[in-house]
Image 1 (spheres, rainbow over the protein chains, first blue to last red):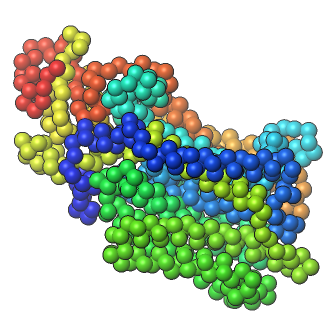
Image 2 (spheres, chains in turn yellow, green):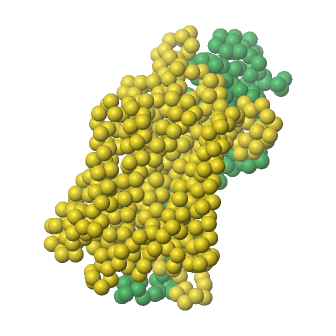
Image 3 (cartoon, rainbow over the protein chains, first blue to last red):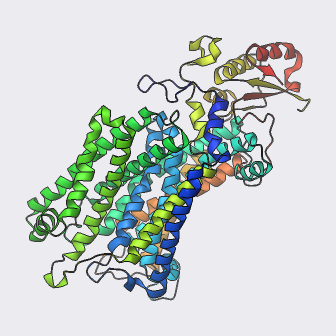
Length: 460
Length: 165
């Protein structure tokens, strides 16, 4: 029985357990028309991306706008951006699980799905940036005859490879095992034989017995507890990719926490975008209520303040360090220089615009919340643009200075991953219960125990 | 349904727990209780304990030792490489990979342990007593053998809050 004096009722409309199953499972049985249209558009984007990838692999990295000075370009911007988005699932499921925030139950499934797809999108960028992606197994530490026998275990790029593959595997299995009880619900409620068989297979023979639940809870506890470390570690490792180099603007100790917070920020913004679409398109307003959105907005205010602090800390340190190169990078290159529009886009969208969430009227207007969540996503993209491009394009030696602009191949690659992400999310909406049914049921009865027959104190 | 069992079917958690406790007070423990979500009173009351958390700890311990030893063996003993005069035994930088790979090992091994112990694996044919137990019913399966002389009493406890099927 769920009872909270702080949040009150989590599900609107006094629903029975059967009703909860039926309403959440409705999209699996009936597909709206817009879904097909959206899938077509996403597949189109995905196809364009495939073509860009084909050009990249068949001709080479020369088709990109990267050069000797700015060697990373859009590929790494988008890689960091997607990984950031991929942090929300774990942040939602795990941090809120550990903090015993029961309101997570309506959102965690969607956030985890998003994580898996986003991390997959992210991993494509470094893979294709290698130029010869079919040789990517060179990164694995195995005895070989290629010169240096082992890979360099001291390199953050190797750590990154380990961290991201581990993160993808762990978040996917965490997501999957959370769905097993819900697949069993579909198996037992579905009318069609095909659905019964398919979901029956994926439910791994789940019955909901006390033996299963006991171990299931222990499993979530263990996985939740250890994966919380990953939220922090994956993006700090991405940050060390930059921070261990001696490039002005990168070589700062603030990078790991700054990246982790940024990742959670963009992830929460993307979750917000996604749940607002889910609410509108699938009428899930009773489960993802206004107060859920409100809670996410409040978290975003807090994280946005940390982002603002991080930005100003960087500027302060550039001045305080007394280093000419740092000063140049922040003041004459980023804030007032060639890349000023990108810097200000980042600062305004991440540190200032989310402060609008202080006003309750804004938190309750869904279209404004949606708009701000999109602005944050764009702002976070510009943050990565600032970090990746500005520092490398203005090196120590003016002779090395080079401007960077993407070619259509890089843009196509990015559009392709957007298409892949949307396709993944749409398939998720269509085939998988988008809200964790069993978890939601455990919080559905709010302070109304026992059908009114027994004394309410008897089990609390 | 099987003739050797009686099924107590309840509509919500509280009535299930109440009936469960009354039945337990009579000295009868149900064979199994099926619920749409975990009910802690039942999990505790059934008297089963899980050692998955202990198993996970030892997986982590051995994985961490194994991975750290591998890194040290590979980078220090077997094939030391010179990277700009840095020490071969760069212990702090091994920690990162150790932590991440340990977490991965714990996850995978714990999942397999869960799968083996809870008998949840692909292709398993579920043993379903009541097909609404994953939807909206709370089902208690009691073996008739365990009832002995108190069958009438138990039945009346169940019908007080739920139904017998």
